[in-house]
Structure formats: C-alpha cells, structure tokens
Amino acid sequence: MKQLANIPSKEVLLAQVCGLLMSPISRTAVVLGALAAQKSEGSAEVAAETAEA
Image 1 (cartoon, one colour):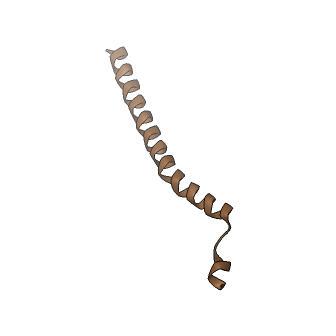
Image 2 (cartoon, one colour):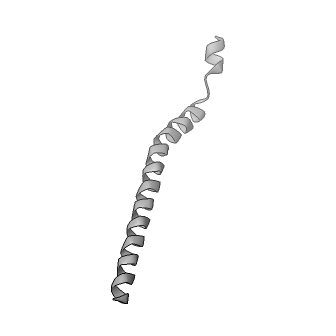
Image 3 (tube, rainbow, N blue to C red):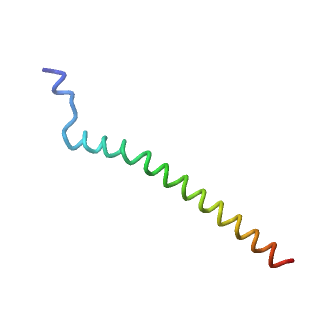
C-alpha cells in the first residue's frame, strides 16, 4: 500500500513524460539553429570577400 501512495499523480506523470519527449526535440532545434547561424556567418564572410575583390 505504501508503494501506491508514493506514485506521483497523473498530472505529474504526464508532465514528466512531456519533459522527456521535449528534451530531444529542443536539443535538435538548438543544434539546427547553431548550424544555420554558422552557415549564415560563412556566407556573409564569402560575400564580404567577394565585395572586397
């Protein structure tokens, strides 16, 4: 009976599952954003070099 009393509520369990699902998604978004920023910096540098030449 004590084990049942220690189980979190349905809302808490759902929040934990949502957190587990969102973690990889948000990490992927951060990585993709960093890659996009990196590419835009690279293309800006190429454009600046082309304008100077």
